[in-house]
Amino acid sequence: MSATTQPNSPSLHAHPHACAALAEALFNDPFYQAVTIDHAANTVRRLQVLAHYCALAMDEARAVGDVQVADLHGAALWITPHAPAADKAQYSAQRTRSLRQLLGPLGFDHYQRICAAMEAQVPADLHSAWYLSILGVHTAARGHGLAQLLLAPTLAKADQAGASCFLETFNPLSVPFYSRLGFTRSVECVEPITGSTYWLLVRGAVVLGR
Image (cartoon, rainbow, N blue to C red):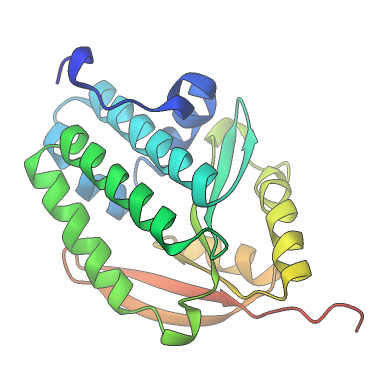
């Protein structure tokens, strides 16, 4: 794909280092491996596509959620229920069109099928919860509490709003980390396209003042 056919992303220009850090952090994740499979033969290109994917996710989160950025090292991207349904549908459709252009035919097919399968596993009581779409910290910046710092502001907002939060992770090593932040409800699932196990983790609404 030539540079002239790249979908536009304001976040890719505003936070190129954060998007690159997310790409590096997520490179070996089964979901991101599957959606960038058209570029599997070229590691540099695959990282570029993944950084652009993360930028598009950041664009959507800025419009209908919350974004926390550690500009050189990573970011946390959330989708929240506060935006009007029409706005959420608009930005979701816009991102889908961009991903069709970015990922390639097989990767985009994987994206649609995996997202549909994972969405079907989300319990009905979480449809109005705050969703952690992406969290990533560059390998070189890990071990200093940065992931927790990226999550803390939005978790505080969720607590003020009395909102539940949830996420999905394919990394079993991350489950204890999220548990320490209050994501104590866990559902183990299998994603049928890649055959990979993942965990749906839930943080219940916090009642402040207790």
